[in-house]
Image 1: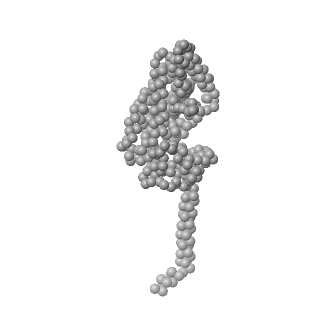
Image 2: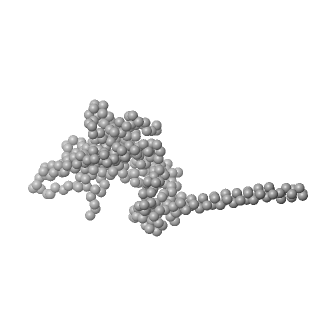
Image 3: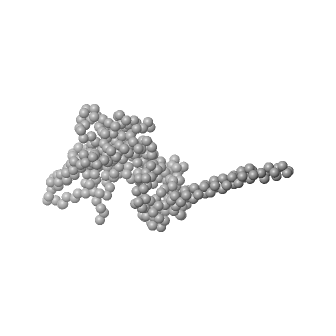
Length: 338
């Protein structure tokens, strides 16, 4: 017993014991400090979340638009906070300086989007830029879109296309008026439809090299209306809330019936895009494409020499990327409501 007591009370043992206690204290203190630091950096979660559905009850079932509800919450909880949309945690930013930091300094962390039914069905199985997951494929597509579609040089080169479409649309409107019998009632013109046709033709000319003339006696007007309807359906479905996106374990039920509608829309959309793509390929083979290539031609050239994805074929990438360029509602509110 004395030998044990002597061993325990030796200077080496006491020093080792003090060292272990100090080390344990430092580890505990560092872990608590790190936990507090991380907690401070996390945006606070808005209250009144329900189990399972989170804050969905605050955003739905009301005549108040979701963005106004979020604005009211920002006034109450501050410029940055989080909410839960089912299983997803969503960061809500209502400050321009913080938003700028999100899309510059932290762009890499906020570039991805959670999987969605729309992106899976209509967006060519997540091949559509903007809805695709962040990675090499997303980065390569962004470079192509910025340099070949949205650059100042490209917009300047296509300036005459916009001018031509505006001039042509005004002439077509005047032609309709000259054919009208002046002795009868005044000619009524649906300006919303006129602006929709103009917007559609400007975008189509720049992206796929097509235009539809409402004054043409051929099937142009019918085709234009079909294209407008499909694009409007795409635009509407993209902003539609799907229960299965918030609660993935319910996605197989298709409670709202939107998956069926998306599949039908995706089928019609692909028929149109595939037709445009085949037309551009034929013109390239017959050397009908002039020096002013449209965006679909540029993608054909790039994808012919560059492999940017092993998951998607070149046609799918081309159509999905052009869909981003055409993703503007051609029947949107071009004129303000009075």
